[in-house]
Length: 407
Ligand SMILES: Cc1ncc(COP(=O)(O)O)c(C=O)c1O
Image (cartoon, protein in one colour):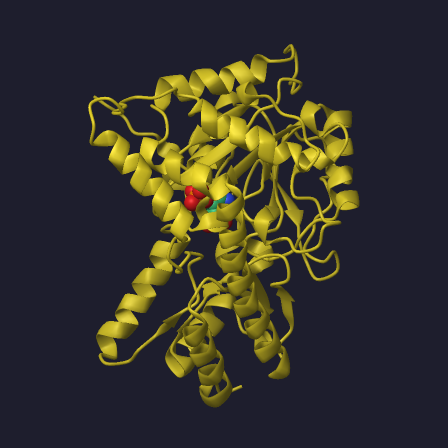
């Protein structure tokens, strides 16, 4: 008789966003006619830019002719796209080779799958609060025990709080894999070079591997802040970087991301290049390459025009973040993030729990947010607002909170 992977039973509740969607749906059913403003899920809303549309159309056009049609491509990703990324990183003074870059269908799958090339007995550390995929993928793999007192046994939580500006310190104990996300989802905090260096130094000292999620680096507006872990000396020996065109260029539906596994990266008992070859093998076995249409779109994102156009959209989203931050600060809320990330992290008033405040905002102001507790125990007492909406909606939400929320 077939048995199931019982690790799935350890997972907590539904995926956070499904749970929010359920509460929101219930509210709409009970209150027909009410128009909600959704600042919950971090999904982009602005249309793709003209040059990206042109690139995607080019991809479709190629498929229409026998001469230019392509089927399965290079499983590691189109060489033109990987070369473009090498050039892109080169401008940031980071030298990569195309063999170190793996194109994928997005950062979510890569950040969930990357753990599979590491031993099951590796000790894993995550920030708390955290993008839940890092935790859940390790739970499913069987690297943790059960869920007890708000935490998974066997997982190391690096606390993010007001005192440390939501940038954690590396664990006190020795761990093997550390997930770092900067700029951060959900807190909107961004690590300085000095703060990332502490992680790189820790990893080099303890022979640990850092999984660096760079999905929001294009939102950094201060050039002194690191846009890649490889800006830190020694990081190529100890870090994998995952990135995505989702938030950079509105590809949440188009789907395209990439992962960098440096040749210099080593783990216990491995030679240089081994981890790179494991990820190549994993992708070759379980992934058949990214969409050729999306690839043409990504090439357009990396063109000079594409970069300029997408910068404008990022500026637009960040002006939304500023609006949220300023409006809520004026109302007396304690507000964090939103300067180099499209997320604003807000302390709940009157010691309300995250879910209590989520419901209050839904019922009184008709605004949907994300309860911080869904990202980990330290997220309790906070909510996350996404700046990816339309400016008019953000203005409407802020006005409604000001006029209708009973504090
Ligand atoms: C930190 C982080 N990493 C990865 C992703 C997923 O990106 P993708 O759309 O490329 O799968 C998200 C999406 O919200 C995210 O917040």
